Image (cartoon, rainbow, N blue to C red; front, side):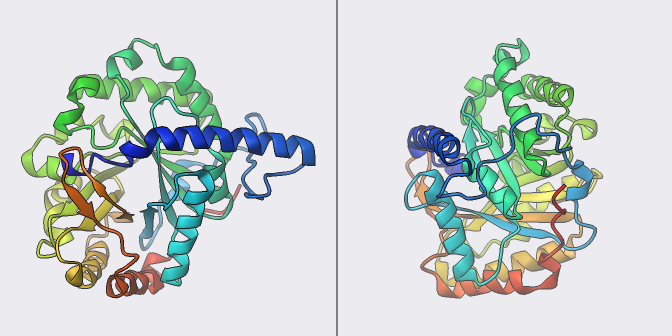
Length: 343
C-alpha cells in the first residue's frame, strides 16, 4: 500500500552505487588472490555456464510447516552492512531465519555478492525486483538484454530462489510506470519467456500485490494466471496491533483459497503501540498454522517514512518482548521446514 512505498527509496541510489563498488572490488581481489572476497568468503559465486544445473522450483515448497524470514534494515547501506544487519538480527533472535528478503531496483545488476553470500549459506533468497519498470518498454523489448542478463545471473546461482517482479504493482502511485493490469500482465509474460529461454528453472515466480489491494478490490485484476505464477503473495500491514494479521490478510487469503498455489506473506508488520506487538506476532504465527496454504512469511524489520510523509516503525531491535515472541516462533518445529539441499 502507499504508506509502505518507501522500500528504502531514499537510499536506493546509495545502495546501487555501493553495490557496484563492492562487486568490482570482489572481482579484483579474487583475481589477485585466486579466491573469494575476504569480506565474503562465500560470495564470489558461480559464473554463468559453470555447469551447475538449476534446482527445480517445486523443491522450494515445504511439504509441512512454513518458512519464516525477514527483511532487516541495515544501519549502513552496503553489501557488508546488509549482511551484518541480518546476522545481528539472527543473533538477537537466537535462531536462524530461513528466508532473507532483499530488494533490487529495476535496471541494477544482480545477483550481488550479498545475494550469493546468503544462498551459499543456506538461505532462501526472496528477491524483490522493484523500482520503476516501464511495462510498455518491457513489452516492446527495449529491456530484453538487461532481463536476459539477470536471468542468466540467477540461473548461475544454482539454488532455488523466489523472485517478485514489481511487488505492490496495484498501488495507485505506480500507475505512471505500470500502466494498468493488462500491461503489467503482458510485461510479466514477456519477462518469464526470457527466463524460460535462458533455462532459469530455479526461479520461483512470486506475484505480490498489497494486502490492502485485496480489501478494496484492485489487486485481483493484476493476476497473471496460474500457469505463470508459482507462489501467490501479499504485503500485509496492520495499522495497529488491534487489527490481527488474520483480519488484515483475510481478503487476500480468501482469494488465495480459490487458487491452488502456495502462499507467502511477503512483508508483514503492525504499527501502533509496540507494547502489543508480542501478542500480535504470536497470533500471526498461529495464523500460519491454521491456514495451511501459507508456506512462508517474511517480517519487515525497518523504520522509515512513506511516500506521503508518514513515519512508520516496525523494527523489533528495541522491543525485547516482541523480539522474544518472534524468537519463540522460530524455535517451533513448524517454522523449521528443511531448506532444499544445494545441487
